[in-house]
Structures are given as structure tokens and as C-alpha cells.
Image (tube, rainbow, N blue to C red):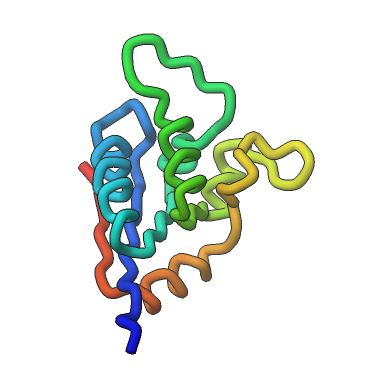
Length: 123
């Protein structure tokens, strides 16, 4: 008999360099991925986190860290309305890595419904 894998969903609302929320979420998700399925939903200014071609000088590149989470199995999705309001395009002109999608707000509902635990990280 196999034990079902538990799922953790993280909801983020803050941008990557305005607070430590993105870094905290990264740390939690990277540890959780060793034992659990991990979903991350980006809402409001958190849509800025995985934008390609960021060049922060004095801090960790949050975009690269979230790409790493996606490469290790985290499902990362973002709100399309939040993305459009911030000028992020979908399709061929998307400024997001392939593994991270601006998808649908319904994805958040599905992530929450299928999760054993949900964490909302905000300041």
C-alpha cells in the first residue's frame, strides 16, 4: 500500500524585492519539495517574481530561485488579470520562463481544494 503524497500550496502577494516574502516562500517550498508536492500561486505584485532578465545586484535573483523550484517539481501559476495589469504578456512574447505560467484564477481554487495545507505569505 502506497501512502499518498501530501500537497502544500503557497499563496504569494508581495513582489520579490519589497519584502522577504518571496525568499521565505522559496525556503519553505525548497524544503517541502523533498517530501511533498508543492503548488505556488502568484497574485498581485508577486507576478513580478519570476519575470525573466532580472538583474538585482545586492540580493538573490528571486526569478532564478523560482525557476529552480519549478525545475524541481513545484507547480507555479499566476493570476492572468494581475499579469495583464502589470504588463506581462502571454504566448510568444511572454516574459516568463516556460515552466511558470500565467494561467487562471481558477487554478488557485483547484490548488487549494487539492491541498493538505495552504500558506499565505504576506507582510
